[in-house]
Image (tube, rainbow, N blue to C red; front, side):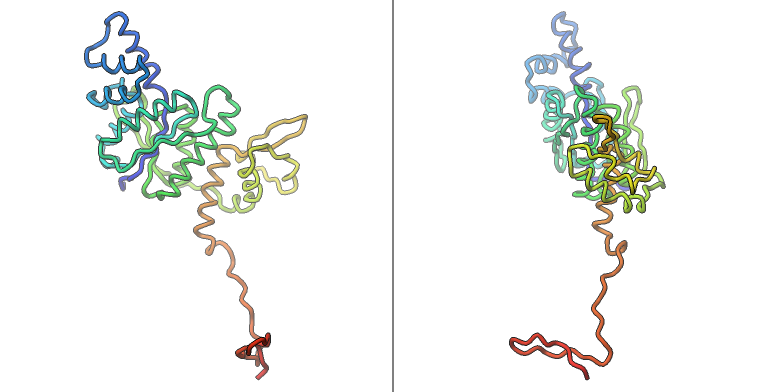
Length: 305
């Protein structure tokens, strides 16, 4: 397996809760190991650069370091990724998500990685489940596809260890659709596991038929009346949309699966359209006619021979 040069990591909150919260409680009763004290004190102060600094001396495999650092350490140990692999941290649209992503960026900046970037995924939050499902997971798919499009599928892999459990399902589906490996490490696993791309694919013909609807739904943030597509509707489209009842009528929004499906084939169509569309029709020349040079101000270009 070729080593990816870019690792796209989903970010969770295990570093804060339960890890650093437990250490902070240990400060009050002096029940904390000396090597963890600077980390707990920096966390208690809300000093995120201090937290990153205090994490560096600890073994990256220490569970206190959190899911993201643990899983990346396992990937490096197993040599699934190179030591200078570029890192993208995709985090939730929450204060904790932003803070942990900032700590991770600070932690990895001076460790020889080609690049370290954080990406906030809009609407990926836990206060509004409907917005999480209909918009947050779609935006996660959109951001992953953008990075893969910019860096190439051959260069990328996904580390789906951190974050909400639903992100794992989306990440695995993205891996299958885009043909890139997905990695995951459970907290009880001794090492990370890989979900290699399987020999399955989405149906391009379904995308060709549904592309008008998918472009419509992708461009708008508002639900679209289902009746708009009633005449062309096929049962295979159901997994691509979310049905939203409004005033007794069905409206449609793009589902996370639909977003992945659309992103996958939209890029493929853009790069391979010459192999999909018929060749342009060329102007034919009538037998016995030849092209003549047009004089100044003349519109006459053809002459019978």
